[in-house]
Length: 111
Image (cartoon, rainbow, N blue to C red):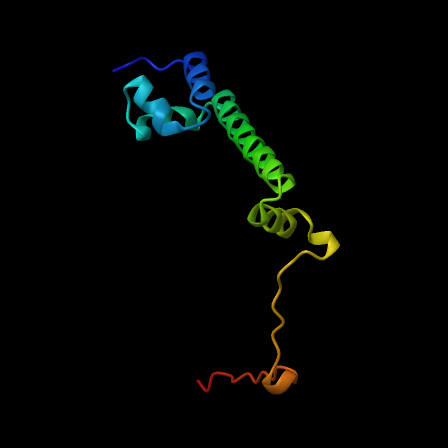
């Protein structure tokens, strides 16, 4: 079994962009073994978190580019997630019958 070292794992995490299955495969260990090692290593966890944030940033940039290119699905998704304060939200209003108020009655235990 490979001796796990934090600096080696961090380099592989960066190379594999935070994909821990690929990191474990590269190290020739199970994911369970890798997770157990990482559990008490804040520097490795920080590298994983950073790699995953970078992934989100990259996809977010690609989504934004697609929206600017006129891809309607990308525009709709972007506005639903990023334009909420401007009213781009889907919401459901729940009412009682025929738009009336919802009536609730509580029944207690008859113990």
